[in-house]
Length: 205
Image (cartoon, rainbow, N blue to C red):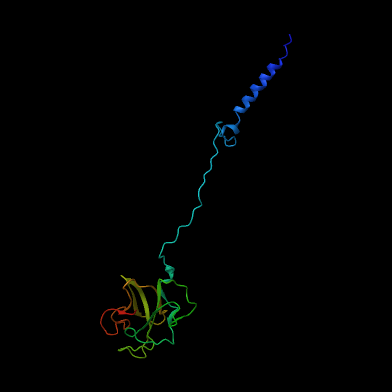
């Protein structure tokens, strides 16, 4: 038995039902992302994290500008030949200055140092030394650099022949009220005592 054809009104009603069902399931209208659906069939909302790019921290005020490796005894700086070798302390001429001070002589290029350091050079050449023969070896050398409170203290030794002589040093600048001093390494070393003979160390600058 043949079924009767659907009427025009029935066809229109069926078309309207189909259109409403498709619209209700559209991901675009639901606010969910179809691309980011998980395997369980549950849609996931698309999210983004926005953040400002990280910036390098600002340098601290008063940061030293001289590398720590430069603060050490040196074999490549000495008192210049045309600088008067006068006794600053017993048996020793001492110069304290900036890296480019004309009283200093560098064997190579003057290093780039900051304003937080000073350069010290010592020499016994041509300096009167009571109790020491004129033809005796004169090899004063900086054995150590220490900070004692606000002061900077250099210890001077008599260096045997064959060893490189530390004729200079790059040292921290003394603190407020401090100064640069030199002192002998042991009682038999003639270098670095106060010219007046009093005290264990000699004030240079």
